[in-house]
Image 1 (cartoon, rainbow, N blue to C red):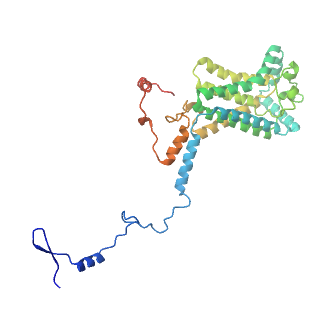
Image 2: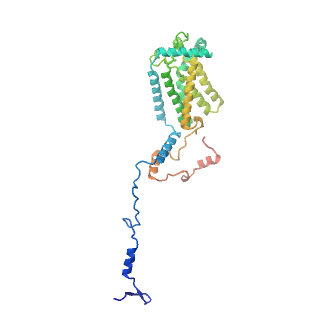
Image 3: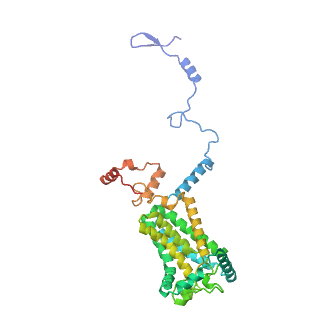
Length: 359
């Protein structure tokens, strides 16, 4: 059998490729492993390549750190949530405070000890102040109503003012107040103390009973509704000092700063004049406030007045459903439009040119 030949375009015979040689070369060449659709070589997965059941420790720690940072970041407060939170917190505070057993014997024993300590320190002047102010009827009656009302009214007003004018600082300041109140409950339980007006042989005047005014939940018709032996620490001082220091740190008007410092000072005079607290009770309230401020600082990494005044939110987050849309977009792996994608308005350009900023 002769060799197969083929004629090229120029008429010259050419040797056709031998099928035997081609089969040999094909057998010697490595076989390509194509995918099921022939799109290319299929890469076999390595053995034991199933995804881990749990993320590695580094990933978990990074997620926990991110959650911690997010929880500490100031957020825009919500009206309904804050109203419910404050109402529920005060209800729990009153419930726990009044649920503490009224240990009358131990409370009177602690009162005698406090009085002896103050006499040893030379500051036991509460009785003289109580009798002096009680001799001026209009003054002591005013102090009775001061003691009964401003303790709550001023504190709520400061919270509302923070909510509207300093929303970025509201949560940190509120945490300090709540922590102050919480640790005071521990003091009521561990150290029951009768107020000076209930002290046996102290000769203090209960100004509410004498002048027939309602100025104390532990006097008159309200004495069965409140624990009378929860005088240490004084939350009148803790709350008023929180109000005064908060306003002092955030306002710039001199008259407002003076009033903010006068308020806790006048509250101290009132609680002593009405024979509801000793000086050392006021010191206990200051220590509780110090604990609350330290806890707030440890959580937010800054005192409230050094945090941004307003909460910065991304563009468009104030629109209805923007938060849900952003979450869906993030889960889908899509890019949300940023500040560079939104055309700048004339008003925004003017503000940027004038250098105005919201601090």
